[in-house]
Length: 320
Length: 103
Image (tube, rainbow over all chains, first blue to last red; front, top):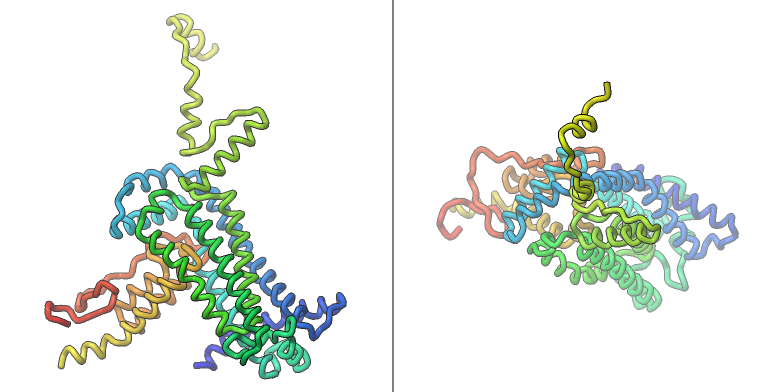
């Protein structure tokens, strides 16, 4: 079993080591101490940046289909209206089913798919095993040679070895303090991300559902999950996770601000913002809320003058 | 006797149901909705294991996860219903022998 895992993870481990070593070399060339924990931490941060940047095309695709989702907003609203006030599980499921069907029909699926998550899991575990290797001062599978592995394994940040977790700290107060601070930071960033999605980017119908309440309850179990990981995972792995969380938070903020779910609080805020901006410029454009409907009504506001038959002929008839 | 046998027979899939349910209630919410299908990949796998057992269920689930990439159209993708409805589901999703006994 471990062999199968090892074989699957081998290429990812190789890539993880290559990226780490590259950043480490660059930072050392810039004059940082090669054995300092900070250099290694920054290399891990670099690894996150590379991984998340590689996932940007997927993210951009998501944004694009979310923009196109604006076009089908009236249809989504229709579905939401049909299930308004129906809070039982059966109706909720029927509603998600219909929404998903609409996404497919119109090619506007705004969800990112399960792939980005699944790609990150082996990276995370590879980093974990690279650190584990380094801890026992074994040679890596690729560019992480004996010397670098030892340097990584022995490195410490403010005196707290990166390879240790709370469970292996054996009373090292610094490790416990740093790990705890990171658990708090991770909880905070995850909390903000979830809160943003849940309170701002969901329609009122969604907020009334039992699933939503369940999700909110889970928000308060999160600290426990992170506390557990702070207890088990070495500091180096925690740095990867923390940086990745912060990236997600910022990315989420940008998405919610610019491409909110139609009908949500964030969408209303965005419309208000756009209206204010156009007012400042001296133009009053009817907002695209409820897509199209308002615009059409606005066109008809000028009443058509009654004309007598002869004039109507002259006006409407084709010119000969 | 038959009940004991069925319990042992259904144990592997119930263990998987427990693991997946735990994942769906603790880990899934960390990331919000990502799946491009309905039901989501984890829900699909859960249902497949309930209906077809661990081996076929995991296989169907893996193939579904492979289908869930950013270039997929997404949409509705249900687990095929098994021809024979031999078992019943408890409220939590565990598979039990059908019948009206205590089970």
